[in-house]
Each structure stands twice: as structure tokens, then as C-alpha cells.
Image (tube, rainbow, N blue to C red; front, side, top):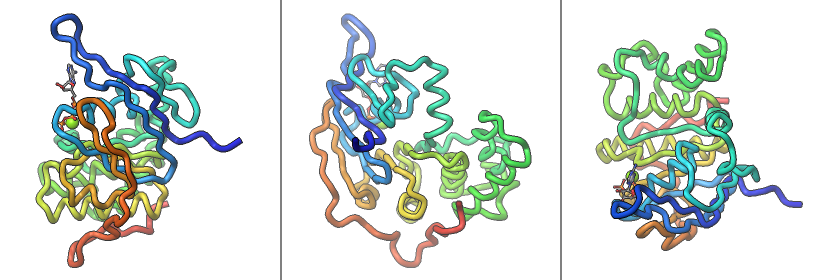
Length: 250
Ligand SMILES: Nc1ncnc2c1ncn2[C@@H]1O[C@H](COP(=O)(O)OP(=O)(O)OP(=O)(O)O)[C@@H](O)[C@H]1O
Ligand SMILES: [Mg+2]
């Protein structure tokens, strides 16, 4: 028997509110994602992209339908089991970086390791490695307020990969960055996918950033309107940009 897909959504719906305020944010999404893919999710505002990402990230549950992660039915897990799955397999990157203020880059990256119960020595080691992987060796003790937007997003990516997740879920990771910084972040996500086999699911409004993905999924009004390979993915950030060192993380 063949391996189950890494991620499989079958007829997933999400209803918010009830009665007059009821809204179907997802109307029946089916999507299968294999380990190692790099998928861009696009679509108009309100089409359900973040709703789907929250479900994929085990932060929320479908109203109906099935979500299988490595063949396991996520929709029937308890809240605790979902949290465990999230901590073990998933890393998150958000548009607003979501770093703790007055907390060093190092401590921000250590946070998911702390939740996981790693020892201080192990946390320090893994955080240092993750920060190095995103090109921030030497910036460990800086506070978010002392870092540029691009650097803050790198810290957030380091935090997402410090636990060595199978999947990174990124919801508009370049939404708050200028074009150059956006390409740097894309170079980094590309390197994580290509060199470390991390599956990347990324929501973006920007075609230039989606172009890095090898598969494009378009949401329209709570449905998948298009799901197609990208025949000519961008293979590297434009020359002259500092891209991620690809190979020193393990
Ligand atoms: N917690 C919530 N309660 C009620 N309605 C919600 C909630 N979250 C999202 N919605 C609604 O669900 C629909 C889909 O929202 P969602 O955030 O998934 O869109 P999106 O595709 O991510 O849009 P954007 O590109 O603007 O981020 C929208 O109509 C939104 O108003
Ligand atoms: Mg959104």
C-alpha cells in the first residue's frame, strides 16, 4: 500500500456564526498535499485562505468534512491531541511576525522548544542553529524593536523551524515587507523547502512571491477554483540579494 498523503482535506466546510449572521467561509475544500511540496495559496480577500490555513494548522476545526494528516483523522482528535500534532509537525509564520516584544531573538526562537519541554541547553543549541539558518547568527540578543521588518520575519521563520517541523504554514509572510525583503524571505522559504525537505504552504496576494511555489491553488468564495502546477517556478531570489544560507541547518 502506498503512503498516505501528508495532508488531505476532503469536503471541508467552515461555518461562522448562525442564523442571520451565518457565513460559510469554506464551502467544501478538497486538497491533497504530498511531503516536500511548495504550494502557494492565492485568492481574493475573504475567499477563505486564512480559514483554511487555521484548519490545516490545527488552530481551528472544520464544521464538516475530513482532515487527514499522515492518514490520521485530525477532525476527531481532542484539543490536546491537536496541540501535540501542531507542536510536533507544524511551524507557523504570520504577516505580522508575532514576536514577543522585549524578548530577545534567541528567546523568541526558543519558545516552541520551551513548550515542548526541551532542556535549556538543547533550546539554546537549536535556537542558535535556526537563527544561523536564517542568516541571523550574531543577532541572538537583539530585541524585535532593534531589528528591521525583514530581520523580524527571519526570527519568526527561525522560530517556526527550530522544532524541525514537517510543514511550515505561512500566511502572507511578506505582506508587511518591501519588495527586496520579500524576495529575501522567499529565498529563505525556498531553501527550507529545497534543502531541508520542509513542506511549505504559503498564502500570498503577490504573484511575484507565489511564483516561487511549484504549485498554485486559487481560492474563490470558499472553494478551490484552480489547482495547478507552476511550470516555471522562480528558482532563486534575484541576484544581488542576500539569500539564505541553505546548508548549515540540520
Ligand atoms: N472568526 C471569524 N468569525 C466570523 N467570520 C469570520 C471569522 N474569520 C473569518 N471570517 C469570515 O470568513 C470569510 C473568510 O475569511 P478569511 O480570513 O479566511 O479570508 P482570507 O481569504 O484569508 O482573506 P484575506 O486575503 O483578506 O486575508 C470572510 O468573509 C470573513 O469575514
Ligand atoms: Mg487571510
